[in-house]
Amino acid sequence: MNNEKQTVGAVIAAAGSSRRMNGADKVFAELAGKPVLAYILDVFQNCEVIDRIVLVLSERNIEQGKQLAKACSKVIDICPGGERRQDSVIAGLSGLEGCEWVVISDGARPLVTAELIEQGLEAARETGAAIAAVPVTDTIKLADESMLVQGTPLRSNLWAVQTPQIFRFDIIRKAYRNCKYEVTDDAGAVEAVGGKVKLYNGSYDNIKITTPDDIALAEILLRKRK
Amino acid sequence: MNNEKQTVGAVIAAAGSSRRMNGADKVFAELAGKPVLAYILDVFQNCEVIDRIVLVLSERNIEQGKQLAKACSKVIDICPGGERRQDSVIAGLSGLEGCEWVVISDGARPLVTAELIEQGLEAARETGAAIAAVPVTDTIKLADESMLVQGTPLRSNLWAVQTPQIFRFDIIRKAYRNCKYEVTDDAGAVEAVGGKVKLYNGSYDNIKITTPDDIALAEILLRKRK
Image 1 (cartoon, rainbow over the protein chains, first blue to last red):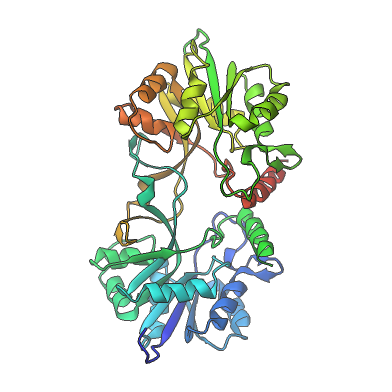
Image 2 (tube, rainbow over the protein chains, first blue to last red):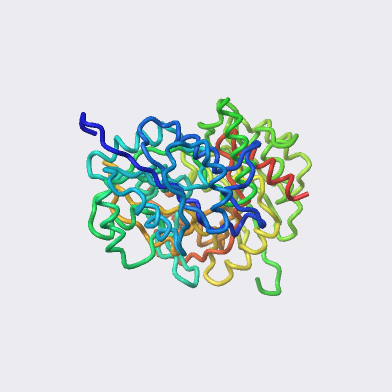
């Protein structure tokens, strides 16, 4: 950032389905006594560089989200998400007009930290787009529909993407306006319109909750922090 | 397999380093009261399709391995590994001359099952090579050395590779004899000489132990089985 303080908004994308959670909703699942989403709201509320937060939730969770966000003065809007993840993010962005920067974060990554947010903003200075990622540890294969291997990309060039993903507001808004197809992360929309995206080092602890096993793992990781 | 019983050997590759285990050795780390390696030996010993087992260990662990393998009648050799993973597998293969098939398995995947071994042998019938894999759930980026994103391969074509990896003995032996460079999995050697490799469905529970957190996660997954 330059010396003049630029406004930084956050979109917390928490409207995803929870197909693998055995009926529970992952963002409100209990993690060591608190809902998953409460951890994320705490981190963003207490992160100095964040000025405003828009929380995107499934329609059915809006009321519960309002209760949870009561203590968070930075939350300026709680809005319903769309069908695809990117529709939810686009909905969230519309609440952040006037911000120079936006930090997009999954509502199901309760171990995000203020450091990851701050490092991401720093990394995004170069090209206007930076995403947290960790080196891939598995061997990855490209395969066709009949599950026949087509190739093994060199593992040292592969990164597993996380959130936060940080963008200059005009870059991500323009990218999504021009994005014709479904993307699996926000940076994908920027890449699709020719934008340059930098990776920065995320954390293996910054897991995404998708199954009840992940809740148990997150509790182990939280205990390790103490 | 055809009606005539073909001999199936197993290489358990357990000679890897344990850099991220805080000084512990991952294959002898305690998991719910037993060493990690004991789970794998149990599964292979009790899997009906397996005839012989060669266990590959670091030189310093050979004695401890002998104690652990005492109860396993199928273990015909315990041999020291080499510098790279593939050197260890090659050492193990040399103890399985005469087998028609070989099942190669990581010594650090304690949640392997007899079903995964049997399904792999079945899948390998088509091309002589099959490997367990699961669909990648993260978005994966290709990046250059400066961590600038070069592309986002379509996630639906990407698989994270596990073990078991199953091969016709002559295919994997010939592949490794001709393999000029380092590979991150055994199938990579077969691909490098133009062999066809099939994927079959592994399991998200079939995790590889690389950190103490993985031990804690494996204990959760073991409890879930009961």
